[in-house]
Image 1 (spheres, rainbow, N blue to C red):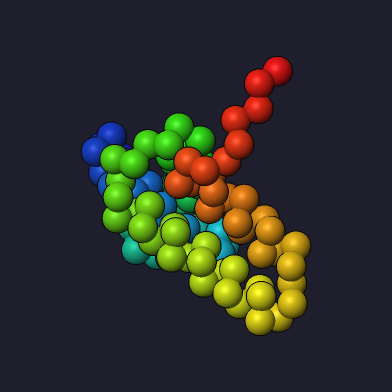
Image 2: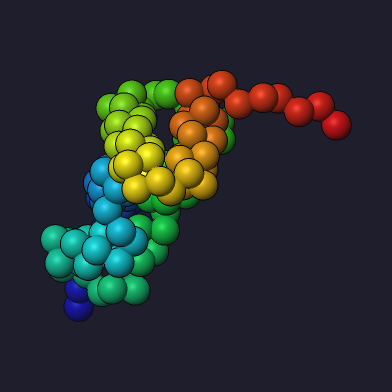
Length: 113
């Protein structure tokens, strides 16, 4: 019978996966890494990876900067992606990354309905 991870262990795994997401690694490679590192099934690793994406999404949407190191990694990743996209003349990618970056740092326009 396998030992179930505690809530704290699961949170640590999600945080680790979120760091990998912030570094710009692909979903499938993060899933594989998590499955191997923690000796868990791919299904469970996908759940952890999905939670990591949701964690970062929530941080961006709520402007929660309680995770400054992760936020700094995201900013760096977005800036690098924008730089590479500019060099490749992929201007729609630049605009998309700029939009996410503006939202992350709180510079997006507030629209009143």
